[in-house]
Amino acid sequence: MIKTDPVSAAVEKIVAHTARVGVVGLGYVGLPFLVEKAKVGFEVVGIDRSAERAGMVARGENYIGDVRDEDLKAVVERGLVTTTTDFDVVPDLDVIVICVPTPLDRNLTPDLSYIRSVTHEIAAHLRPGQLISLESTTYPGTTEEIMKPILEAGGLKAGVDFFLAHSPERVDPGNARYTTKNTNKVVGGNDPASLEVALAFYRQTIEHVVAVSSAKAAEMVKVYENTFRAVNIALANEIALLCDRMGISVWEVLDAAFTKPFGIMPFYPGPGVGGHCIPLDPHYLEWKAREYNFQTHFIALAGETNRKMPEFVVDKAARVLNGARKALNGSKVLLLGMAYKSDLDDYRESPALEVYRLLKESGAEVSFHDSWTPEVNEHGIQATGIDLTDQVLQDADLVIITTKHSDVDYANVIEQSQAILDTRYATRGMTSDKVTLL
Image 1 (tube, rainbow, N blue to C red):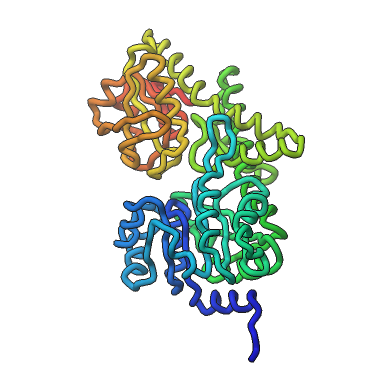
Image 2 (tube, rainbow, N blue to C red; image 1 turned 60 degrees about the horizontal axis):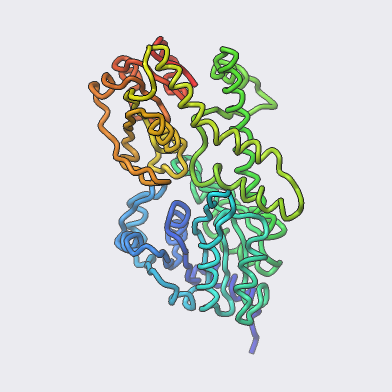
């Protein structure tokens, strides 16, 4: 009788699409991933601590903009998707993909509690032949230094009895061009056997998979990508601060600079940075670097620059109001946009939240309109938006454009408003002495 080695057995099930897949965390990363795997015939189990979210997915009810309603409904109706809130199902799974949050605490220290908790849950049910892949963004070494010891505590060994890999998520919420399927996927294994199994798995649904030498290298890829963006956005923000001092339009400077066909790429200033990546991920690398007695100066400076942009916006708002002989204290200020990005319902770490808070602290009467995020509840800010009517615009002493949503008629905003501070260049091409650019 011929025995099949564990690697070949795992790859065979994956290629035949008979492997059962578990996705832990059904958020912006997990749910699109679950749907893509189910679309090609994998039986997928979604695991989420939220009973409400697990129930919605089980009923085919979509809550993520990057997932098409009909795609989720189709795979649920075909019986390819089930959900649960516990980990008792783990022994029945062949592949487990972890897509849980990795926030920072107030001291910018990585909080890996979700990863640790999930790994302990999986370890309690781990069996030979399974592939465990972490997609959550984290510092280099997490998979090997944190997850591996927990998973091996029961006696099974990575690369021999089970397989362990890291493949950083590359989700760009709201991007209609690049989706889970056609975005190049980086994969690093804890060992050669784990890499082989992980590559086989990701190649089933991702058009181009890029192998790197280790899980640690894959983790570094992700934090470098977001650090690159954070540093360049910080440079654009710093140039905006300098241009403000010098009386130069930063937007004119950047538009002209970006006409150069080589050696430069567009990055723009704004009220700060938001989302689940840029405000957080670079600090994972900054924190880990201290272990090696290494100072990541660019990361620290970029974070400092980007974090002070909301304060600059409020300062400039005060100057705009002062020009109209009004004080910020007591003025009615309307924010247009609370989402961190255009045409998106995600306000995680949005700089508009900090602008809102600082305005409130300054005594302004603050309200906001955002058709994508009509309610916000984060970092102690709990507020409900208002409808954008002509009367609302007319009553505001100042309108601050904090997010550039395409469903806003900015020409009408200019016509109806008394004064506007545009932090996103949403009024590009619209000349008016009512508008002050960042």
